[in-house]
Length: 255
Image 1: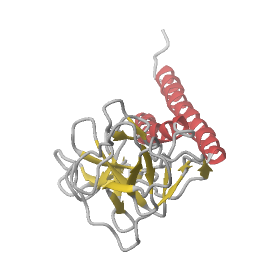
Image 2: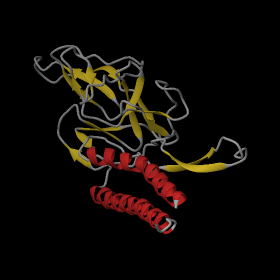
Image 3: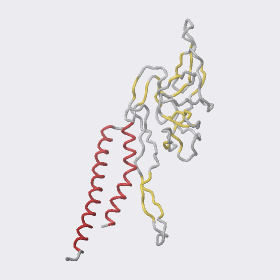
Image 4: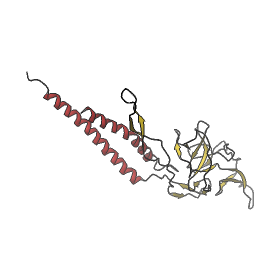
């Protein structure tokens, strides 16, 4: 009976990673540009110890690979809102100063004149440095990622001036994983490293945002399934305990 309880307890531990991923997705259903992760995969780990020289056992491993499936388009009419087309990702500066990538396109200009995302990450330009905007100028972004400014105080029709180009990369050929700060990085490269853009031309759609690609109905169904599986495993542990108690009582000698 100990083996039954051990297997049930191990199953609860294995499902923990999937529950954490699901909880994170449900918490970010309304987050702009949020991307789901792929399901938990199984990896073979070598069992160390006496008598286990050639034994391998499967364990759940979560690499947090990003699903770049597009989310719903939300037209906003705001000049600094951009939707990253196809599998384009935007380079930003992480809190630790490293280069990270995101699909979040709700941009703004900070009080210091730095172009940043809605959650405060400075947007990187093609020269791998944060983009700064001169004060009191109107900013617009073209489909190819060019950042243009005009002076609203000047009369007449003005020609927009290009001041920077967004750092855009096509990730169609590069697996991305999630960093601890929520940004993306290339799976096969060290944290903060850039990667070569794929064959698809990078582009953005201005005055629009991308919603989360988490399906609320699918997430709720998975949550119910996880809850039922957890209850089933707990019931198996309790049944194993009851069987042990019954077996122990049968072995007792009558006084």
